[in-house]
Amino acid sequence: MVASETRRPADPKAVEAGKRFLSATLGRMGLKADVEVRDHEGDTVLAVVGADAAQVVGKKGATLDALQLLVNRVASKEVEGDRAGLIVDADGYRARREKDLTTMAERLGKKCVTEGKVIVMDPMPPRERRVVHMALARFTGVTTRSEGEGEERRIQIIPMPPPAAPAR
Amino acid sequence: MSQTFVAELVAHLARSLVDRPELVVVRAIEETGHLLIELKVAPSDLGKVIGRRGSTARALRTVVASVAARIRRRVVVNIVED
Image 1 (tube, each protein chain N blue to C red):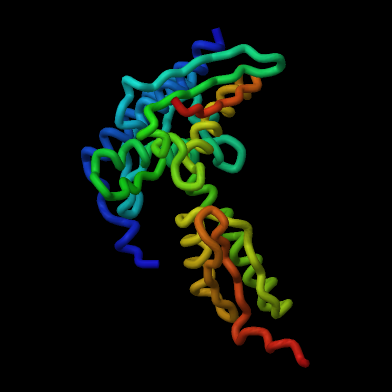
Image 2 (image 1 turned 135 degrees about the vertical axis):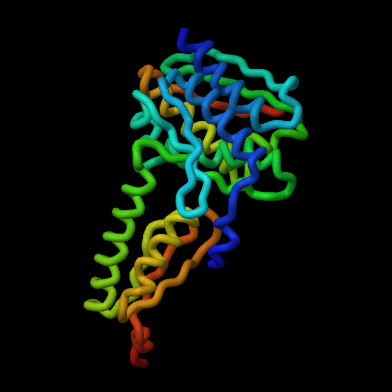
């Protein structure tokens, strides 16, 4: 994965369209919340703030991910043939999730080394897979790769050297 | 009350996604046990509300479901062809 592909400043028109759409959507969901535009390590983040921000997250961030997908579809209309690449966050969820993913990756990395077997994780979106790849890149004794297509794409944690082929 | 509320949310989401917002039609139908929301868009906009492998439609339903849970209603969103 090439970092410069996914991280570059979002188009101001796309940011504005995404923010306007998200604000209007939260209002129509009956939530008291505002949207702030922030920069996080080069990514443009639309942060939901206010009394009802926590309600925007949903189970395992499902509502947040759904809103993020819709925001990017709407914002991408402003940047012909390009991805808007906006992140939607609320209640510090993305940072929390990144920390949890890192912890989980390290735990599975250890398990992979101890058991000497390939571990296949649950499917995850690209940004979450990147967190796991990065966490395990500095981990000795394992390597990672993604397998599968689209929403079924999952990370495999592979012990290094790889397990020997089963004896015939 | 919840009928128009949910219908307006779906209409807003659909109108924001499509190229022909004036052709978005949303109907709320009270069925036994749930509220049915029928979403109609221009045939050329069907892909815009469905998305690759249904990803946009799924996201739309997730947002609606979060509202439905809060108002304790079961809501079904159907995308129908014109």
